[in-house]
Each structure stands twice: as structure tokens, then as C-alpha cells.
Amino acid sequence: MKNIVIASDHAGYEMKEHVISYLLQEGYEVKDLGPPNADRVDYPDYGISLAKSISEGTFKRGVVICGTGIGMSIVVNRFPGIRGTLCSDLYTAKLCREHNDSNILVMGGRVIGFGLAQEILKTWLTTPFEGGRHQHRLDKINVIDQTKPMAK
Image (cartoon, rainbow, N blue to C red; front, side, top):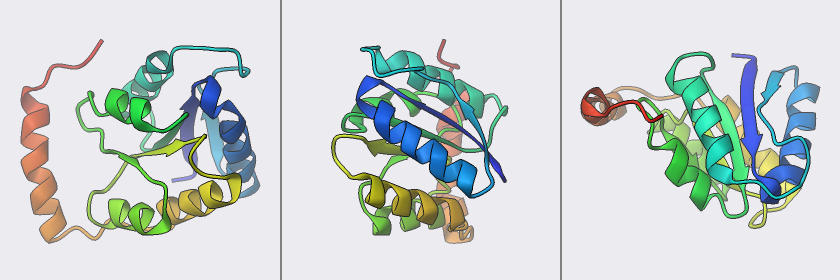
């Protein structure tokens, strides 16, 4: 997987630009869903767009960034098949991939610095899902998705 989708709000714009630069340097193809600058926007608009692109299968994994990461977490996890995980440390970034097969990394642009964000992203991108007992647990969560209508 060498392509990834990314979005932010105004509070996460600067970190989004840093993350895009890092991803390009690492050889990823990046689809930037916006915003195009740091002017004030509504985070749900960008979280919805990104979550739909993954829920519908256009992309396998994505990154969303807002001020704290909380708002984006709430938005993206409304969609079937989404396992958006808010990470502000390396341990969480590792385990959300190993145990939860996270497909959206959520970060807070006002909570962590660029260096830590880059390390979290690197950990999240390179840590594989373990499967096994963790897959059994995800299967139980997937049952919920089968009864949940697609958000609009």
C-alpha cells in the first residue's frame, strides 16, 4: 500500500502539510482532500469526505488531523468499516494496527509536535495487523457495520 488519503481542518492544516511532505519523501502517493489553506473550515466536511473514500473502497488507509483529533475521530467512526484511531504516542500507534487493524490515523495538530506526529505515522504505516484473536474481535464489530446505514 503506497497510496494514502489525507485531510484536516484549519487547526490541523500545518501538520497536514508536514505529513504530506513526509509521505511523499517516503514514496507514497498522497490524495489531499483539503483544505487548501489554514482558513477556518468545518472539520466534519473533511472527515466525512475522507471516511467515505475509505468506507467505499477508493482508499485503504487515511490520515485526518484537527486541533485535538477528537472531532475527526467522532466523524470518521460513523462510517461502516472504519476503524479510526486517535494516537498521540507510539504505543497506541503500534497497538491500534496490531490489534484493531486501524485504517484511519487521527492526530491532533494542537496536541503533538511535528516530530512525534512523523514517528506516530511511521509506526502506524509499518505495523502489520496480527489477526488471530484480534480478527475474531473485529468480526464482532463488523456485525454492527452490517446493520448501520451509510452516513451521507
